[in-house]
Image 1: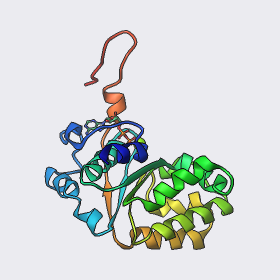
Image 2: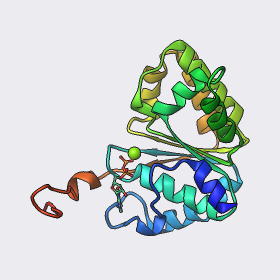
Image 3: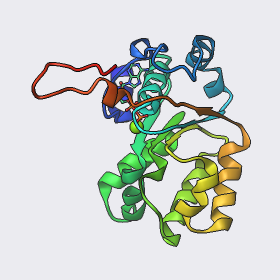
Image 4: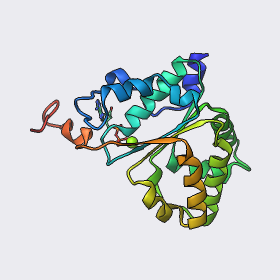
Length: 199
Ligand code: ADP
Ligand code: MG
């Protein structure tokens, strides 16, 4: 079952919470990480929002928590925002989109990665709203974004839809701000050296 759930989750890569170095991410305490790892928030259908600039570990943490949930027998669905919208738009006639979205709607935890990836038109924002409305109080949603909720109106275009989405997402949620420098840049791999650690 775990293997099936892992396949369905569609993680872009698998990295556990054990591989997450808290010395590199000072915004999260080990106590907080442990609490998240216990998954009580998931049992209580709380949502999580990870905010912060690129490379600070938002996706890694989301995947780590997703893996933890799967180990505990739960169903997880990971989708980048840039793929979610095309799926929603082609659901009526594309079998692939139907399969993905059916799994997503049945998941206990839905991870939507990189909310600010693209601006949406009215139709797209509407489809997104309907999905959030469906998931509301049924599944936990874990969102990652490089911009805070105050900027989501710009992305979603329509103030009414934005308010309705925020209302549902933030009603029972924990917003976690991650900051610091980009792990990708700090541990940049170079063509000429095996690895370079700056500073
Ligand atoms: P973001 O989603 O915030 O842009 P990622 O989670 O994709 O960033 O992290 C970028 C890379 O850096 C990934 O390979 C991730 O595993 C690694 N990384 C980031 N923060 C940490 C950390 N605190 N400990 C270990 N690896 C990290
Ligand atoms: Mg990311």
